[in-house]
Structures are given as structure tokens and as C-alpha cells.
Length: 223
Ligand SMILES: Nc1ncnc2c1ncn2[C@@H]1O[C@H](COP(=O)(O)OP(=O)(O)OP(=O)(O)O)[C@@H](O)[C@H]1O
Ligand SMILES: [Mg+2]
Image (spheres, rainbow, N blue to C red):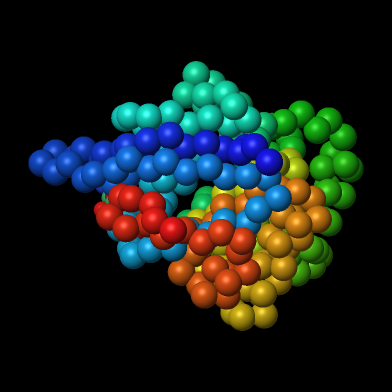
């Protein structure tokens, strides 16, 4: 099968006042639909930065990234993300003034799912899939535990039914039961729905559940 995401010799530096950090130093890798990938590696090795390049949050200084054969560098990054990706961020970025349910509904509102009942029904279904019920749905993020917030973030990433799901430690705050549930959901998305899941994780359970395991070392990707 051909790759849905191709990363070609991509490089990224952060520049602050005095210091340049070579966060990603020439990464080439392909990701296919129907496969579950994990990326592990030390803190500071460049994992989140690599995800930020694939999700067009940062722009590579060198190299190219193709989605479905087309360079993402020429696309509007918001449109690209919305149409193709579900992202579970390392710090969840839930909207604090919205309830859990409203957080999951929001991408559908942006994407133009007109009927509120439709958005609500799908959001409730996704929340229930990650093990959150009606009581959780009404709460705002600061009224939920870290693990519950993380599950809201997972549900939100799935709200537009994206082909590619990118996760940065999506089970980082979960106990083993909830973590196993999220792993099962990710595996289902890959093996039953043909999605491509790419997850940064230190968890051996997550890595063992994946099909292809990469590691980042000092800005480079190794198998
Ligand atoms: N906004 C930033 N400005 C400057 N340097 C940054 C910035 N974000 C990350 N870095 C640096 O880039 C390098 C890679 O960071 P990155 O966040 O990609 O690591 P990571 O592998 O995701 O680490 P962790 O496992 O701790 O999340 C690190 O040296 C980090 O200090
Ligand atoms: Mg990180």
C-alpha cells in the first residue's frame, strides 16, 4: 500500500535569543493507512517537534512532507489539519470555558456539521467510547481529572473521522485500565477502519500494541 504521509529529509531548528536547538535533523519516513506506529525516545529527542511538522504547526526548514502524494507546505495549514488529521496533544488544549461535550462538538461546528443534534449525538457516542458518561459530558475541563481530560482530547481528535490520528502521549495520564481502553480504540481504528495512527509514547503497553516501532534519538528517527 502507498504511504498516506511521507516525510522527506525534514529538518527543524528552534532559535531563541542565544541558542539554536537542532530538534529534528533530517528525518525520512513513510506512514501507511492500516498501520499503527509508535515513536519512543528520550525527553528532548524531538518527538513532539516531528509531530508538529507533520501536523503543519511548524514548517520544516528543509525537506518536504507529502499527504496523499501532495506537499502539505503549499496548503493552508488549518484546512489541512481539519480535513485530514485528528490530533491528541501532549497538553490537551481543551477549551476551559466549554463542557466536555462541547469540546468534542467544536471541530464539527468549525467543519460545518449543521445540525446541532447530529453534532451532539456523535460527540456523546465518542465520549461513551472513551468511557465518559453523561455526568462527565456536562463538566468543564477543570472539573475533570487529568485522565478524563485526556479521554475528552481523544474523543475530540476523532470527531471529524480523520484518516490519520497523531497522538503525543495519549495514555500518559491514564491508569492501566483506561490506558488499555485507549489502546484498544486505536487498534480498532487501524485494523477495522483502516486509519493510520502515529503515537509518541513511552509506554511499553502502547509500543507493544503497535505494528511499527520507531525511536527518536537526538533529532533522528531510528527503527
Ligand atoms: N518552543 C521551543 N523553543 C525552543 N526550543 C524548543 C521548543 N520546543 C522544544 N524545544 C527544544 O527542542 C528539542 C526537542 O523538543 P521536543 O519537544 O520535540 O522533544 P520531545 O522528544 O517531545 O520531548 P518530551 O518527551 O519531553 O516531550 C528539545 O531540546 C527542546 O528543548
Ligand atoms: Mg514531547
